[in-house]
Length: 158
Image (cartoon, rainbow, N blue to C red; front, top):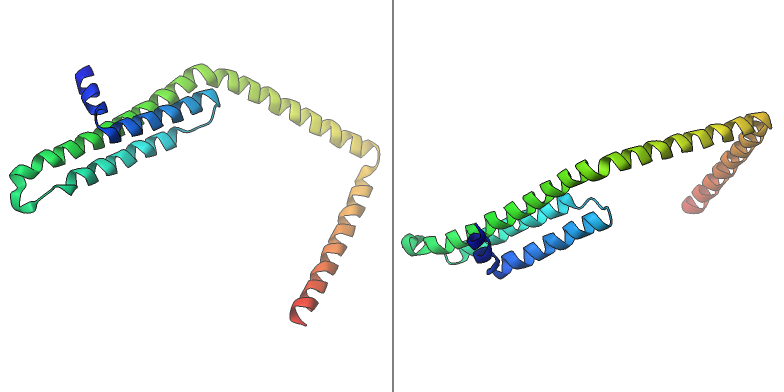
């Protein structure tokens, strides 16, 4: 198994894609960005590159000698896809096991705190009769918007 991986990494396309996947995985973990779909996309890109490379030396008139080139391209195709999907899957499992519980409790706590603050603010508005001021301000803004729209129409169609 290790020999297969070492052989696959001798291909520069595989190496570049694996390094890029590794960088994206590191960014996903360190900065808590969700880059799993980009990692899978990079693996799929490697698939298309591998198939493309395999088809470059394909000669339909000499299929027997063309098979090796196609197989080499398919090796790149499948290797990059496996690495991309495997990395994304491992990241997903890792994040679900280790980060989810902490994030969920923090998110719930923050949401409840924000709801409480909004309710307190609404209560204060109601107590201080700010509601009338807000309605008056909204009506004034509607009038300004209507006047601006009318002036714009006159200017455009003049």
